[in-house]
View 1 (cartoon, one colour):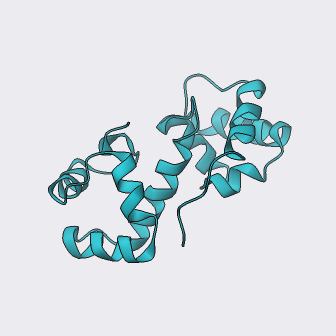
View 2 (tube, rainbow, N blue to C red; view 1 turned 135 degrees about the vertical axis):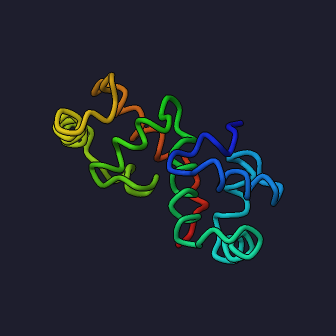
View 3 (cartoon, rainbow, N blue to C red; view 1 turned 120 degrees about the vertical axis):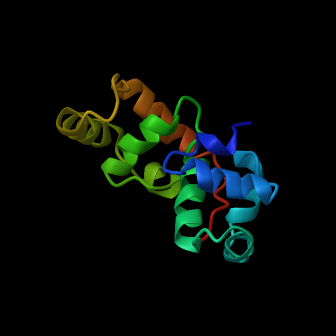
Length: 134
Protein backbone atom coordinates (compact mmCIF):
# COMPACT_ATOMS: atom_id res chain seq x y z
CA UNK A 1 0.00 0.00 0.00
CA UNK A 2 1.61 3.26 -1.16
CA UNK A 3 1.35 6.59 0.60
CA UNK A 4 -0.61 9.32 -1.19
CA UNK A 5 2.74 11.13 -1.54
CA UNK A 6 3.92 8.45 -3.98
CA UNK A 7 1.77 9.88 -6.80
CA UNK A 8 4.07 12.06 -8.87
CA UNK A 9 2.94 15.56 -9.70
CA UNK A 10 1.23 16.09 -6.36
CA UNK A 11 2.60 18.90 -4.22
CA UNK A 12 3.13 18.58 -0.48
CA UNK A 13 0.24 21.01 0.05
CA UNK A 14 -2.10 18.93 -2.12
CA UNK A 15 -1.09 15.71 -0.34
CA UNK A 16 -1.75 17.43 3.00
CA UNK A 17 -5.23 18.49 1.83
CA UNK A 18 -5.99 14.89 0.85
CA UNK A 19 -4.71 13.54 4.18
CA UNK A 20 -6.97 16.04 5.98
CA UNK A 21 -9.83 14.52 3.97
CA UNK A 22 -8.74 11.10 5.36
CA UNK A 23 -7.11 10.00 2.09
CA UNK A 24 -3.69 8.72 3.08
CA UNK A 25 -2.97 5.87 0.65
CA UNK A 26 -3.23 5.29 -3.08
CA UNK A 27 -5.74 2.51 -2.37
CA UNK A 28 -8.08 4.87 -0.50
CA UNK A 29 -7.51 7.55 -3.11
CA UNK A 30 -8.49 5.17 -5.94
CA UNK A 31 -11.59 4.01 -4.05
CA UNK A 32 -12.83 7.59 -3.95
CA UNK A 33 -11.30 9.31 -7.00
CA UNK A 34 -12.15 6.58 -9.52
CA UNK A 35 -15.60 8.02 -10.13
CA UNK A 36 -16.88 11.48 -11.06
CA UNK A 37 -18.96 11.66 -7.92
CA UNK A 38 -15.97 10.72 -5.77
CA UNK A 39 -13.81 13.34 -7.44
CA UNK A 40 -16.57 15.93 -6.96
CA UNK A 41 -16.63 15.09 -3.25
CA UNK A 42 -12.83 15.38 -2.99
CA UNK A 43 -12.91 18.67 -4.91
CA UNK A 44 -15.46 20.02 -2.45
CA UNK A 45 -13.41 18.85 0.56
CA UNK A 46 -9.95 19.82 -0.70
CA UNK A 47 -10.33 22.47 -3.39
CA UNK A 48 -8.27 20.31 -5.78
CA UNK A 49 -9.76 20.32 -9.29
CA UNK A 50 -11.50 17.26 -10.69
CA UNK A 51 -9.23 17.05 -13.79
CA UNK A 52 -6.16 16.99 -11.54
CA UNK A 53 -7.72 14.27 -9.37
CA UNK A 54 -8.56 12.25 -12.50
CA UNK A 55 -4.97 12.52 -13.73
CA UNK A 56 -3.66 11.31 -10.36
CA UNK A 57 -6.20 8.47 -10.26
CA UNK A 58 -4.97 7.22 -13.64
CA UNK A 59 -1.41 7.49 -12.33
CA UNK A 60 -2.25 5.55 -9.16
CA UNK A 61 -3.93 2.84 -11.22
CA UNK A 62 -0.83 2.54 -13.43
CA UNK A 63 1.29 2.20 -10.31
CA UNK A 64 -0.62 -1.00 -9.41
CA UNK A 65 1.55 -2.72 -12.01
CA UNK A 66 4.56 -4.45 -10.47
CA UNK A 67 7.86 -2.56 -10.91
CA UNK A 68 6.15 0.48 -12.42
CA UNK A 69 6.87 3.34 -10.04
CA UNK A 70 6.35 7.05 -10.45
CA UNK A 71 9.51 7.64 -12.52
CA UNK A 72 8.51 5.03 -15.08
CA UNK A 73 4.97 6.42 -15.03
CA UNK A 74 6.51 9.80 -15.98
CA UNK A 75 8.34 8.16 -18.87
CA UNK A 76 5.18 6.41 -20.05
CA UNK A 77 3.25 9.66 -19.86
CA UNK A 78 5.94 11.36 -21.95
CA UNK A 79 5.21 8.90 -24.77
CA UNK A 80 1.43 9.26 -24.46
CA UNK A 81 0.54 6.42 -22.06
CA UNK A 82 -1.60 8.01 -19.35
CA UNK A 83 -3.61 5.05 -18.09
CA UNK A 84 -3.80 1.28 -17.80
CA UNK A 85 -6.20 1.34 -20.77
CA UNK A 86 -3.56 3.11 -22.87
CA UNK A 87 -0.83 0.70 -21.80
CA UNK A 88 -2.73 -2.50 -22.55
CA UNK A 89 -3.20 -1.43 -26.19
CA UNK A 90 0.50 -0.83 -26.84
CA UNK A 91 3.00 -2.93 -28.80
CA UNK A 92 5.97 -3.68 -26.51
CA UNK A 93 8.69 -3.18 -29.12
CA UNK A 94 7.41 0.13 -30.46
CA UNK A 95 6.63 1.42 -26.95
CA UNK A 96 10.13 0.52 -25.76
CA UNK A 97 11.64 2.25 -28.78
CA UNK A 98 9.58 5.40 -28.14
CA UNK A 99 10.57 5.36 -24.46
CA UNK A 100 14.25 5.09 -25.39
CA UNK A 101 13.97 8.00 -27.81
CA UNK A 102 12.20 10.36 -25.43
CA UNK A 103 14.48 9.43 -22.54
CA UNK A 104 17.58 10.22 -24.61
CA UNK A 105 16.18 13.70 -25.21
CA UNK A 106 14.62 14.46 -21.82
CA UNK A 107 16.53 12.23 -19.34
CA UNK A 108 13.40 11.25 -17.42
CA UNK A 109 14.85 8.09 -15.85
CA UNK A 110 18.41 7.13 -15.02
CA UNK A 111 17.89 3.50 -15.95
CA UNK A 112 15.75 2.49 -18.90
CA UNK A 113 13.43 -0.48 -18.41
CA UNK A 114 14.30 -3.49 -20.54
CA UNK A 115 12.07 -4.65 -23.37
CA UNK A 116 11.27 -7.67 -21.21
CA UNK A 117 10.06 -5.42 -18.38
CA UNK A 118 7.95 -3.26 -20.73
CA UNK A 119 6.42 -6.44 -22.17
CA UNK A 120 5.64 -7.61 -18.62
CA UNK A 121 3.98 -4.28 -17.81
CA UNK A 122 1.75 -4.61 -20.85
CA UNK A 123 0.90 -8.23 -20.00
CA UNK A 124 0.20 -7.30 -16.37
CA UNK A 125 -1.97 -4.35 -17.42
CA UNK A 126 -4.35 -6.77 -19.12
CA UNK A 127 -5.09 -8.37 -15.74
CA UNK A 128 -5.95 -5.11 -13.98
CA UNK A 129 -9.62 -4.32 -13.57
CA UNK A 130 -9.96 -0.70 -14.61
CA UNK A 131 -11.81 1.29 -11.98
CA UNK A 132 -11.08 4.86 -13.06
CA UNK A 133 -13.84 6.40 -15.16
CA UNK A 134 -13.65 9.74 -16.93
